[in-house]
Figure (cartoon, rainbow, N blue to C red):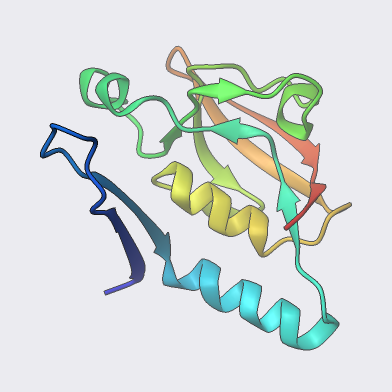
Length: 141
């Protein structure tokens, strides 16, 4: 598929308990390839940053948008998205000229965009479509 996964298991259960700790991460393969290429080309890794986060899974399953897109769970104060007027609950339809269907799509697009780039956003809010632009920030890895 299009994802790489890691699974970590802590088998050292607490005394008197049979519960182990299980952690996992799934990363889109396109993100791994973009980061690897950047490191091989520049010798460092920095990420484009928009400042949006996914809603909790329970909220995602309760709310379905009429539009495709990525529902914004949180917007970081002072972030490029916040300065562009993006709000919690907005649905991102297009980021940097590419349609998106999930927050993972948004993150993949932003990762592939150089910091300082002006990125056009198409957003649906309460059924109304509108456009804005954000200057992609930088976040060191």
